[in-house]
Length: 285
Image (cartoon, rainbow, N blue to C red; front, top):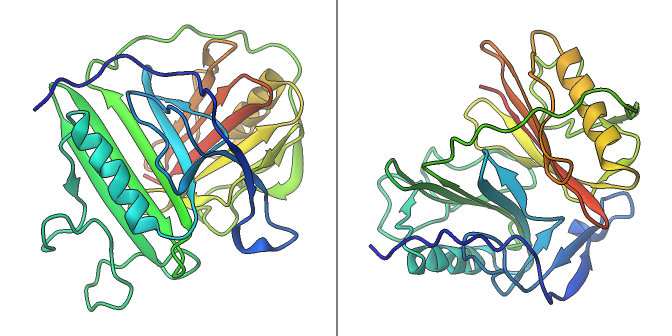
């Protein structure tokens, strides 16, 4: 296995910007995606895909990205798998009893492991947990026309850096009437999460990998980042049984974790910029 690159490309440089809308409906969120340039951990944006929002933190020093794909998700997905292998990450398919290299499900086959009904009918999975080196996962979801999303995550095994707490006082953005990912929110969430003022969805929320449900959503910050993060923290801790130690990290990359015994986890990670972005993930245990 070749040496895994540890130099992280945090800054996105020289990429083409493209505005896309899934399905083209007027009420769907528009996405500003960067279609070329570095991601992180040596990965580059694969042709046929575009970065939604920003590269976000994952764990304490890992990274993750949501990428929009138009036209041929299996082909683009294979491109990210190829990149991973060239970087020394030897990935394995998430589909058991399938031929080697078959990364994607087939909605017309007779297997019971086809993904959920609804807009995402094809799922591609590849991952590898190398306990002494790294954890990498790539997951793709697409409609029958091939358009969809890829969620790429890379986390070094030494990702145990303790993050500094951030001050919790200051302005708190209020919740709006718009529920966040209503179709993917577990029924046990009470009250459910709502978009807070000063932020807006820029991608269709995608199902999380958690067995019992959840979602991943990217939001653009249209006001100041920290009040928006405090607004989501306030909602996290206002949900039944969820607790959190508060905001941690830095003003440029604030984040918050919340959990409930038997109820799963909630995370929000922010990236300051012009504009700033927030990624929220709900994992229902």
